[in-house]
Image (cartoon, rainbow, N blue to C red):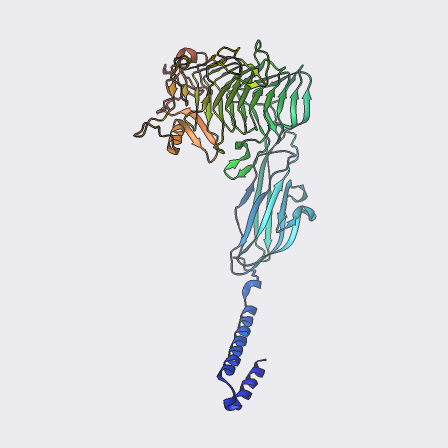
Length: 536
């Protein structure tokens, strides 16, 4: 083609003045373009993209040197872990073979560059290429067999790579597994005591029949699958200890992100419901967290106690923490915190709270409800009388400056026969984030309290309820890590929560929820946690 163009130029050149300069210019441009094309073709033929090296100094690099899974329950598949394999050199590398050291006996499943190793002979695959400055992806999963042992066990294997050069490299695989008991759509019809030897995984909910009592000794762990819950028609007795609490949680043991386990997220399972016919329930040192809701108590007669809740924690929930509908309950030395719904929602009934912390700092939505709501339910003229709502030595606070909803004291116009239906609530020696009306009838309902209110006002007398003021609430407590969903509602040394409690009431619970002496300095703090100065 090049020769043809040259002959054409010569032909037109011989014709003399009849050949235009524009024609010669076009022909010359075509010749230059062709020369450039031929040059690029020759250069591309010499490109080293398709060249591979067997130099032993050229090796693979990995995004991490091991794959470590979260603690798993045996027989339950893990989530997928991902590993990137890089060739950072200027020449390609061939991987002659990849294999798991334990072969077909390995519990790990590996997919490398789209090829499932478990479908190969003896977990052994061959012939992969990683071109220069390129990478391939490895995905790993694991399902552990049942150990037949109550103790956690470590399982590990090694994923080995042999390059064309003969160099061998490896990635360590590790996981700790625990055997568990599994319950599916289980209804208990007789008295049953669960074992604390292994976690108990609940699918499709667990029902305690009307004639049955479920006993949960110290150290019992109930792991509920998505949507599952605990429905109690009979009775539940959970007796944990400070060191071995009874735990009710979701069954996911892995992480959403490296820093955030699913167990720290709300709505991982249902919750606990005490039905109308259920009485005499006792929960001591129970840790209930990450449910769609916490504990819900259906309406029942007030002549018998429905629930005694002590030394416990209910937190990080997608609904109400403790829902009480016309029932009799006693709650002491307990934290109820960070709920999308109300921390405590009392509708009528008879409830007493002593040395409790109700902390409404739910981090995922500004549409969170109150720390405490006391109500009189009216449905088609139905009235739920408030016999008692007694809150003493408590902390009730949150992000807002008013997180307590207590009803008006005037008779309800819809129920004129009811005289002051909501007068039976009382707050004494509490730290409260609320606004109390100045009427004398309200002041008699609030005695010896300290209010969690802004300390500064502007020139017009308005409080500074700003984002900075929300931080003011957080600064009352020892730990506030909204990134990792970690909280410690122990008051700081400088917190106004300190010294608020009535010592005579504190004597009923001389130690806080964590076992710290709250009477040592003679001036106990409000809430379920006592500040104790560290020894030098």
